[in-house]
Amino acid sequence: MNMIPNPDPQVSLRALGAMLREQSVLAAIEVFAREVGNVFQMRLPGFRAVMLVGPEAARFVLVSGREDFRWRSEGDPVTALLRQGVLVQDGEAHDRLRRAMNPALHKRMLEAYIGGMVRGTDQVMRGWAEGQPVDMLVEMRRAALLILLETLFKVDFSPDMESLWKAILKTLDYISPGLWMFWRGIPRPQYQDALRQMDAYLYRIIAARRAQVGEASDLLGLLVSDDSMDDGLIRDQLLTMLIAGHDTSTALLSWALYLLGKHPETLARAQAEVDAVVGRDVPQMAHVNQLTYLDQVINETLRLYPPIHLGSRTAAVDLTFEGYSIPAGTRVMYSVYLTQRMPQYWPDAAQFKPERWEASQAQPQPYTYLPFGGGPRNCIGALYAQVEAKIVLASLLQRRELRLLPRRVYAHMGATLEPRPGVWMETRLRRV
Ligand code: HEM
Image 1: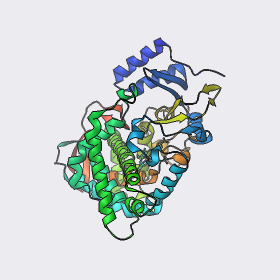
Image 2: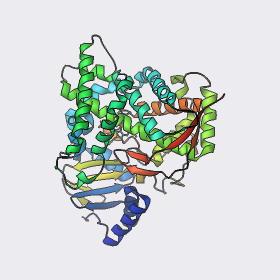
Image 3: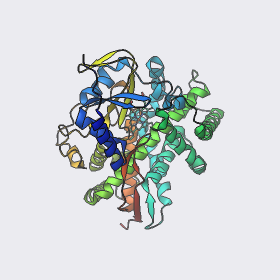
């Protein structure tokens, strides 16, 4: 049995250099993988993890060895925040919550959500002045929040958006990689106000829904009509969906706009497709399947910049992977980002090439493309997110000319992989 390789000080120094140069921890992880291999240790004071790269690793964590891993990790801010949310539960408790929420995200519900997706996008676009720069990282967050709350909770978020904006960003900051990793368990009082504000809002919408009578098939309706759930458990699911369901879509949409802005020929082709398929109609389900080039753009964006770029678990028992021993209790991570850029599976891996997703081309090899995870704990909102991305982008391309302003953007490892410091674009109404 082999010990997991530990990068030597020279490699660590090069990784640190790359991190500082590129302003991104991802650059450091890339150096480790290139110089050490697809299995290595990440050691920082107070933080240790084993990093795995490649399809075999993903299959091991997500499918073949999944019973030997735990998601929930006590002392981790994600668990502290989401408490008993479906994302951080294991075993029967997880499966029960997942079953309870599945119907609200089922394929047959999506058609009913499309109106909300169009309205959320319209509302955000109405705030844009002709020819004035807007930051799409901010604008897409507004759209994603309005859409998520309207479709899944049947709540109009516009009156509360401004007062909760800072609290939402602060909550995301609370669960992002940071100094807490080195000093676990230390209280972080600077977050308490934001977390309290979020809770107060969620308990308010739960109480308002309980006061209403009648059946409802949206997510909040399903949860309040489930007698086995108290308000605390419902709060945990709402916060899970609010965070997992809007921050990821924000990242996907803002990266897609960045890449479209960087590649004007792709933008023109996507816009021509929207004109041909949607024309002047309001985007609807019938258009979704016909927007095939937009699909390719979305797939390629998720390949290059997967919003969830790392999967993280804890080994519940002593494990072996490809001859390496992983003791129980080890934090095990697999890199979606690096796996989706492995040159042996992805020719011209670093290039943005939506055409690689044309139906005539080969499908990706199993477990080389994992933007929504895999196995029984894959993303519950995968279909929702893909329809949402198409409707939002189609609505934008239908109405606006978009021009990316030349500013440096890097991939920031926050709660998701975000284009920082933002995606600044000038927009103009289209005269068609
Ligand atoms: C582009 C958008 C999205 C991406 C890239 C994404 C990605 C992912 C990934 C990779 C996982 C698996 C995590 C793991 O195995 O550790 C996951 C799980 C999850 N996602 Fe998403 N997601 C997106 C949108 C959404 C939406 C819209 C919702 C809700 C409306 C959602 C809710 C969840 C939940 C609740 C889980 C946990 C599932 C479980 O543990 O059973 N996600 N997502």
